Image 1 (cartoon, rainbow, N blue to C red):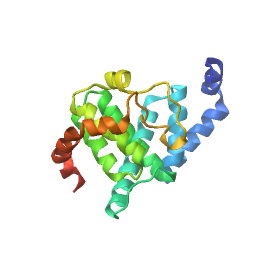
Image 2: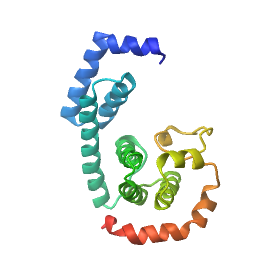
Image 3: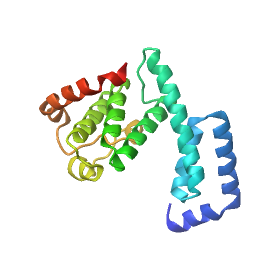
Length: 192
């Protein structure tokens, strides 16, 4: 959207009414895909922060509740349907912690996430996140030094995550296997 289209959307009473009705309905029905549709629209349009926070908090509540149920049933999360939104929210929460310099909190979330997902590409990427965090790397430095910003994703399911790097992923993981072993020892209690 260009600036003119954004301004039109921000001032279009029909669209704003639709967005508010969708927000209220999604909150009431706990529809995570609709909540994300609303959240993404509200963020793009830079709308009322308190409502954005309310939607985001509900997304986290829904996700954490459902992730716990899925994991307790002995399954892993797939990057499909509602589970993709659960993984996305978990990931975004970890990125948020990292951006606020909560290195330990971010590392814990990424660690748990890579142990409960069924997707090798994302699992490997999350391990790289944990390695960077264990070395005290801030998010901006990680993005500048490790992420391949020019790569194109082949599929939509990974579009919400940093999964492309400017080095050979498997080689990097092998070179840092001791870091991952140490972090596993330190954080495995989170999986109980």
